[in-house]
Length: 265
Ligand SMILES: C[S@@+](CC[C@H](N)C(=O)[O-])C[C@H]1O[C@@H](n2cnc3c(N)ncnc32)[C@H](O)[C@@H]1O
Image 1: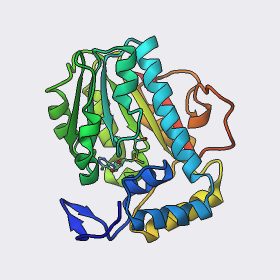
Image 2 (image 1 turned 120 degrees about the vertical axis):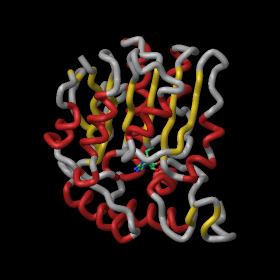
Image 3 (image 1 turned 90 degrees about the vertical axis):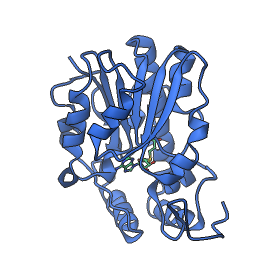
Image 4 (image 1 turned 45 degrees about the vertical axis):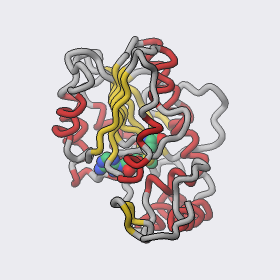
């Protein structure tokens, strides 16, 4: 994108960096503006691992989704904080295992909405839907999701690289509890979120750079991340750096995101 044209169009503000677009820039995408690239470059200069972390997080999403579809037979997916489409998106993974998989994507970013058509090209046997909603309004999300998903049957709820945008004071735990509470036994929670446990100084400086760009980020300890899984049964290997969650290749250094997958008993 060139970033020329009106600064605010269809709710998309091109004058301020936006986390989804900065993340898109880290992943080598094209759906970002000069302000996003500028912040991305600043963060990458502070923390050279940031683009690597974005790629490792994406790989965690792919492995987690594939595992749930193959090993646990999950056929319904609710992905909140979907992000700008990046192939392969979650429905491609799920529907490559089970063409009849039903997927509901949710994000609150108008840019993601503008690109949602790329998320909606699924298999004819399955369903893919996009809902524009805020994770801090879980009841609205559940109402919309229930139009597509049978909430009496297991659902994989994925909150991947979402919760570091929502502080505990902003209701991060309430939203997870409300969503998980509404799901049937056998449902799964897939979660990744930022931590300063591995590279405290880099992460502290990265958070400061985001804050200077007007984006608040929260780092959580392993114990803090564990509180999101209370009442659930964590699958092996538990809460680990996303690169160490059932890796398919040797992890390339520390990744400052914890990930885990758990089942609702
Ligand atoms: C870093 S991206 C992660 C994208 C994707 N889940 C992944 O891991 O590759 C975070 C996404 O969360 C979305 N997001 C942040 N806060 C949100 C909120 N309160 N409600 C819904 N989506 C939110 C952003 O718009 C962005 O698209």
